[in-house]
Image 1 (cartoon, rainbow over the protein chains, first blue to last red):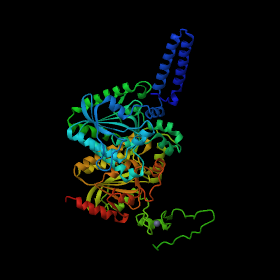
Image 2: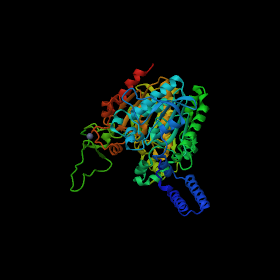
Image 3: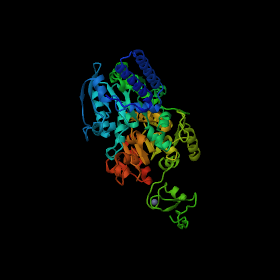
Image 4: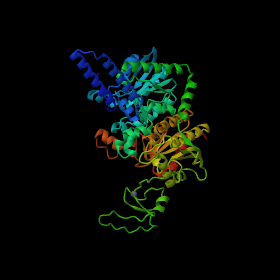
Length: 318
Length: 280
Ligand SMILES: [Zn+2]
């Protein structure tokens, strides 16, 4: 795949062009530049490492939104096996922005739910840019109920800019669909692991995000509002999105520090899209570790721990 | 209302009509000029067209709860600028200015009391304070009043109004949706009734949690109620929105709420409903 570089990756891009020039000269003139090539490659690697270990919140948002980034169904292919999709909310329709189904991960059977974005216009028409309607949330709850009934754990992979803001979504009560999912997930009698794999867009994310273990990919973000939306309201202009991203503390490390998530899944250097296979392997390892942690906990204890975890979230003085 | 004489207002060229400050309020719906005392005595409802003005939490409690039965809980809970949030202004400054302006500490008053003799836990959000946004303090107070009601086997009434989650608290504010909804799940498991009253406006994060989870959901007439803001919807869909879009009447038409109740009837309606659920 030809990966579109991000703006802040420009220094890497320039070095890569220099390397290509070097290689061309090498082949044209038949001179030995092996050591120069090696040095250049090292320099590229070092620059990439330098950039990627000092990412700003806004840069992470851009990585999280990269269209080459692995999406839900890519992880289903690479980190899960035996996926069977289950469609429809039994009420109104199916929602292709939120595929659900049964699958196995490391041999463990589970219900899987996630938001799916598209890579081109046609895909996005189908997937609605990963923005679910009420049907998506109601289908997700239906599938969670199956998991609860048969004692499967639930794994959700979150990647949405937010629930869809539309007339139909309001008419069919998107707010209620999310609220009911949040309430029911707080007391769902089976283990739940949630991973934010890209964008964790507010209520649209939390609607499948109440879990015993909430993980985030290293470059994913999770936020109460989009940085652009926040900037438009609190800075009076969308152009302040980078500052808003910083202020909102929406990155994985910041959220882990505040105790709002339980763990971070490392990404390959340069982001999950640079090596989707490694990204999927890391995700699988992390989900399996989380599942092993909670699968043996008796359900009453699990529910008490889940309640207490979210119960403690809040900072105030008395 | 003929007790108060209306001021004579003459339109001036190039200027809108001037209002004598502090005494009179012009109804944004019908244009009626109402004396503030009359407005206050009428529960802040326009006597001419029934437009429901924003009602403060203290006045709301007085209008709903049996006299001398309300006992506030968790009054001192105070917000903290946990992220050190600085936009055009800082969260700390915003909090300070709203405290000064409203005399409130945050955007909700909670406690116990009685409605028509039925003991209950009640929370009333106050739109005057930072658009009644849902932050840690609101989330904690809502959760505590629900937990208290579960423990004492009491119904809960939450009078909602909100511009959404409190952005200044980042994901902490989002997690209040989980915390409050979890407390409601346990309250429901204990087979206790919860009534949500939606007032103008109730939106976004509060709608995506406790405002939508009532056994019974009541709205005040014409209240703006919805998840996404109309501007965002217009920009995303490029659609013309229905004229009654996201009003209480729109929600009633689409089957999303039980009842629309005039403010003057709210207390008796709640009393009647609580009577049905009462085990006494
Ligand atoms: Zn009026």
